[in-house]
Length: 185
Image (cartoon, rainbow, N blue to C red):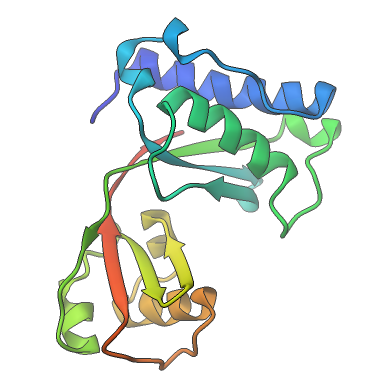
């Protein structure tokens, strides 16, 4: 799915407006998807990443597509600003300094592999987002994480740590999925 520049701008404005609404009313902007172009009504999974001066300030999203794209953006923008456990809520003084990055995820595809080396050789750096799942433990890295972890082995090891596993953990029950993102900034 490739959105037009106008549709991308609508999504960025929706994210920014949802954060402003959160600052004033303490909740996400209520969005009626039927008032938006058909492409923005599609059921899609998204992440919203906030940065200030190239430093992460919040990132929240969903791996499963469960609501219209424009609604998902409004909700995730609010949550990234006010409910990312790693950061205090965004304050009014920070609002004008926020850089908003939207990631629209493709459906995830399972990667079939027979060893860690086989998995590593199948990865596409700077293209693949990964979901790692072991039992009830699950973690993901967006494709943008390749910018700070460019080596596939390093990328995978850090994703294991984020998931709650050890860096060198390996099991035949480990599941890995890949997805791609349309990024809007």
